[in-house]
Image (tube, rainbow, N blue to C red):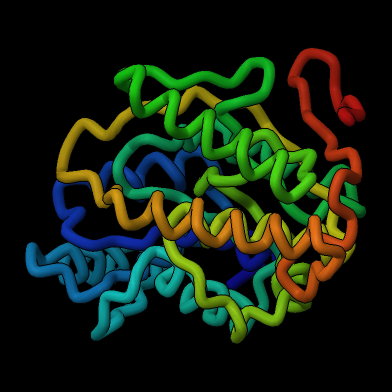
Length: 270
């Protein structure tokens, strides 16, 4: 691979996403033609992994990692991160296969990292100025907003969308996060990685996006994922209040996080 092509890897975890995988690959590689894409498939019964292999055979930018166990979104991303670091990528992204993440935002997210060497993570954010969700029931929107508000207050975070799964990391920060100790999954995984990034001294930008509900396939969201996230955030928050932050709580809790406004550029937020 050329030096330019080797800079960015977008990881797409899949489980029964055969209906969506072609469109997802096309959208990502249209938005970032010089990027590579890694499908991490958890032995999908519907043949998603096999279809991904067919796509990869025709496009050298596409790679497939087959896993024999299904242990959650966090496990899939951790496997993808390890693969990315092993293969020397500079920027490593998270992207859902269900069509909810706008691939068109990827260039702005990468620009936020390339143009700001001190920034370690760009989050595609629903809950900053300019961000929004469409096609969501009010109950789900309230749940997401409430979960993020709770995480911000409990952990002292300056991030507005800590549960977001649309992300682009600088690989060097991933290499410092002690990923072998990450046990969380689902929403909790994203909050955990946000905390760890801040704890490791990384700065975060939030790029506003329009988030859409999936059109095809079945959502993997469950009540147990939400319960896990709220339980762990409560535990971490209590540890912080008791003055025992340990490894889980950001040493820089409350440090201002940069919010990226397309029209006005970076703005410091409290």
